[in-house]
Structures are given as structure tokens and as C-alpha cells.
Picture 1 (cartoon, one colour):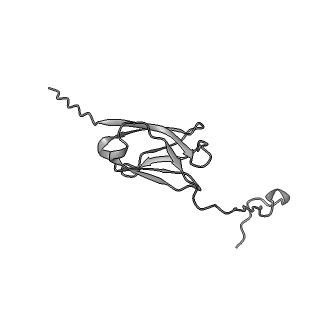
Picture 2: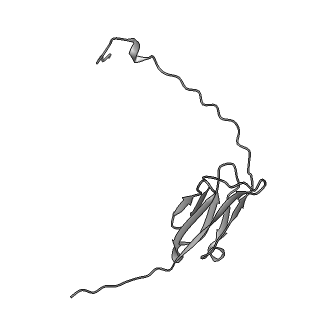
Picture 3: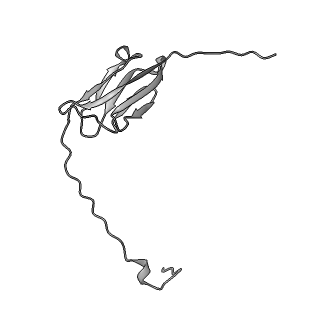
Length: 117
């Protein structure tokens, strides 16, 4: 005898675009995630995202992008609809210099398998 139980969690989809609030340009690679479930997604090359969540998982949605102020929305504001976000530029990021170098080039020596104590 087999007993099959089917539980349908109520799921909903939220989708839309993430924009720069000043220029109106889409933000490629912005993060949209739910803080409770940890589920999230990154915007595509068009600034679009689409996220499917179970209703009981959502507490608040957070949208962020490097150099911009994050936005958060409560669960009652986001259920099953399109949401576009317009992020404000945040604190300017200072220039970062990455300086690299190589240790002595091993191709210039003939030593192989040398261990020094």
C-alpha cells in the first residue's frame, strides 16, 4: 500500500529591472535576494532579474550593487508582482591599485627537486 502526500507550497515570482537612480541605466550584476531563505539572483546583461520564492520564506527582499545604497522591502510589499528598483549611488569607492610581481623565475635555474634545510 502506498500513501502519497502532496504539499503545495504557495510560490510566487518577483521580477523586474534594477536601475541607477540618477542616470536611468540598468545595473548589470546587481544582487536581489531574500534575507530569510538566502535565495537570490544576479541581474543579467539587461539589468533584469526573476526570482521564485515560497511565501513562507520571505521576510524582506534586499537589492544591492557595489557603490550603491542597498534597498530593502518588507514581505507585504513584494508578493507576486513586478518590481523595478532604482538604486542611489552610495559612498564613492576609492581607487584600488593592484601590484603584482613574480618571485624568482624558476625557469632560469637548473635545480630540480632541491630541498634546503
